[in-house]
Image (tube, rainbow, N blue to C red; front, side):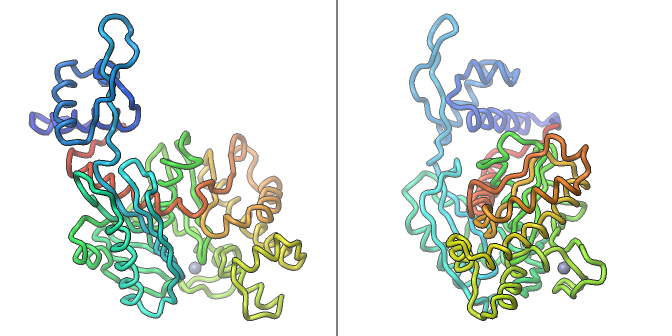
Length: 392
Ligand SMILES: [Zn+2]
């Protein structure tokens, strides 16, 4: 923890620590917080009183005593405010209203044809407005909006490059903040997905995980020692543009033979159009055909699983994660993707990094990104009301 002589700052840091324990370990007593943090009971009590006054913490009656008077237990007040989480996809927008603990209150999904960035942003604003209208009354109201995007963005929330949307330099954060007048956080959708899985999904107990989002394109969110790894300048995770064939077809990113040209939803649909001789294919219809036992469609999914495996082997050998979570729209095809994928890992991943590795499809279905995005908004709110703390 960084220390400073500024007493006010020290108090804010302590308050953040106390709130952190109430958020993650509640119901919890003041005495237990003092024990865990090493703060004096008097300090904890005074900080807890401030948190109760600011409606972020409730007292919920007495708990078990370890001798002496039974302690009053504390609970984080998750409904003191609400957040919006958005997954801005290449063809659709999924948005949720959550409370401060990430519980989904309402969900909305709409399709878009990506006619222009301005039209999609207009739809995005309408979707967010509808969720805001349905938010329950609360002390802090809507505390923020988090948006996961299929591309890279800078620290000002400008979407710099999203090849599958065809957008460049779109000041998304600025536009959404101007519309609603509340804080907005923009991040890559796979980063948001990784954080969603770490906080709410299969990755809860894992410190080193890679979340791979398989949609129209492929992206990865990388969590190392419990923290999202962003790279030197914030652009890590563009793993769909890892070249797996040095002289392969040209990708929209400018390179050749990128992984997502073989293993994404876009690749699947291209192959289906060619091999099934049909222009009218989408993921949903292919999934129902596979479900009905259509062998040609099942073969398409199995080949996709093989190509997914090629990239996953490279990730395993490169990062040695404990956990690889596969999410995004293609997660619905787990039944046909998993076997060829695992078969390839068995044959090609290096044996040492493969030991103890767990590979799973997301159990949050398509909510990893929206939940992570909403948690970014909640984190920003707490960083502004208390103070963020760096810990080793
Ligand atoms: Zn590429």
